[in-house]
Image 1 (cartoon, rainbow, N blue to C red):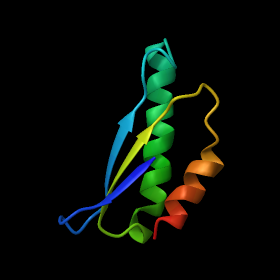
Image 2: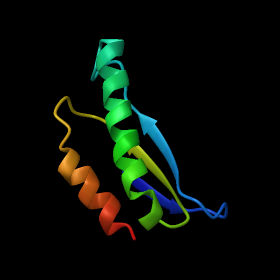
Image 3: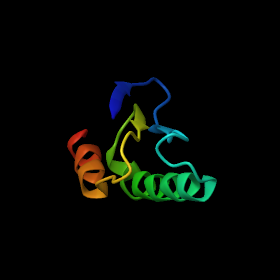
Length: 73
């Protein structure tokens, strides 16, 4: 997960879910949906920053991602 300040006044999200980690498109799309929803629920608290999440393991601990988003305030 990478964080960087932006000048747009709103948080932005970038997702990288590679085919080598989730070979089936259904699984990649599901992971993206879950991460987008997690971002959406915490969007008000994030401030003006760009967030890039790169998935590099089949087992993603969503609690860890949520904690990183909460700690990025």
